[in-house]
Image 1 (cartoon, helix red, strand yellow):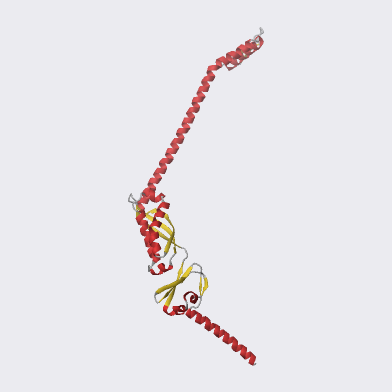
Image 2 (image 1 turned 45 degrees about the vertical axis):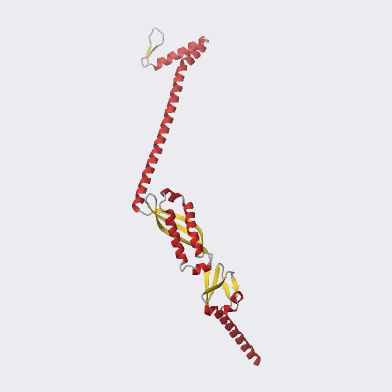
Length: 290
């Protein structure tokens, strides 16, 4: 019985001791678990004493010494995420050289490079960075020709990034990829007018293509008619010669020539619209009208 009581008291003591140690460790922050892409910046009496970047389990007392036990009372630990962040600014107003009001949408990436500067150089670094990007867009893209705004987005995006990068570095940011994704007209009347002009231009181009096709077809037909006329003329020119040569060959055989001319005479007679009277050659005078 005493043994069971001792085991029970030992178990309760171990549980209570473990709970007390965990509570004490949390109060004094004896250990912490740091996730990936995260930095913890420690301050002591308002001054930065260091930061921890290596992910995993770490013990502040091993990094900062015994004064780490006083951090929960006289210091503060700032957690900064260094993941890549993305932002998109819509409809930044820019006027082209022609006076057309344009809306520019720009997308950019950013991540924290210097956690200390990110925390203490600017009270709202993300908002300030977005404002700087918007200002750079207006500065770099204003008063450019309309075709430049619509076609040279890569070069303009690089200019915006070069404009913003020095200031973003001062605030602990590193500006990543920057790209102008959209350039659109803001004036509804101008959009309608451009659509009307585009439709009219398409109609003109379509009509011009149709007329060009018809002209090509007419040229082909005329060339074909010309060549056909030439061939027919050549055939008519050589026809007497061909017929005469054939008749000369036939005349060499009198029997064939006589039969041919008799046949041609009969064919001509049959084609004649006149009346033909056939007799039997006797004195009785039997007649047959055809």
